[in-house]
Length: 375
Image 1 (spheres, rainbow, N blue to C red):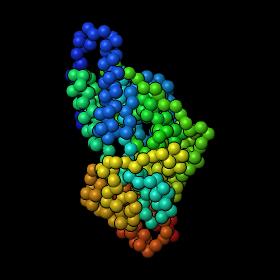
Image 2: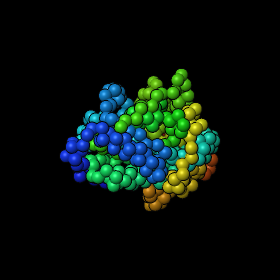
Image 3: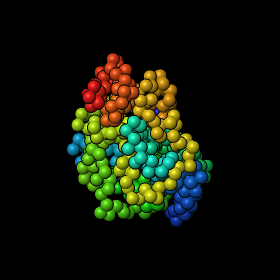
Image 4: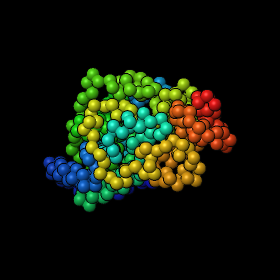
């Protein structure tokens, strides 16, 4: 199913012309094109560009096992997509190569996350969501990269993807040499850590392949040990139903009570497993102004955020990934964080002001928080 926001280029390459050229000449052209597109990618703000084929049989097996164990929770779309996620040519016919890119997003040092977790009156938001939503920015850059390729080689079949369709992006990035999948299931780069976004161009161009990345986690288990909810149930295996990112972003109903105290003051996502990863000592700050924190969300006061009416929430999260969870889930998350914090008169008053909220879910979490504060 094509993404209406990102339609594929339907102009096929000149097959006859390619067929009439010697294979050696075609390979030489593709090698030169691969060299040039890496330079174009860097000029467009991508820190790395890699190329891989579409063979994902091992990862398809892992995905099917993960789904069979119910680790996807209420993310039913993971099952509905079937094998299109692990077989790129089913998603975009004709695909034989994937151009994978990464873009750094960390707007500050990771140390500040640890400090913020010790300030219960403030909210912790996953660092990727502090600035402008990355989807549009990266999609536009990838489209420019595709345009450059087309200017050089003529029309070709492709599709630009940034979380806009079912894609095993980390598996593809690993095959393309951008990094390895760590025990926390995030991609890690030996020179850049893991604070980066991924994007892809599916294409029918027979570009030369990069060497897959090799794993360097060794015996380290810091990401597993730090997880507040024990969501990393085994190396390389995450039960999303226990993950704070799932509970605060993907889940649309009530957060299970057993997990609420474990959320602490995390109100949108969780970065703990990345913060402790030794490889992130090599992480670089982003050079993208759009990823800089907006609306003071890097160190926000929970009470201030809880007072946002829906109109204010929509206005202040315009262009942000946060907006997609909606105002009710936003209040749900903050109510839990307030319940995990100090029982100050201000916190109690803020919670009591939402006792009559129109959302039953919000009211439930407000009452839970007040009970935690002994009110």
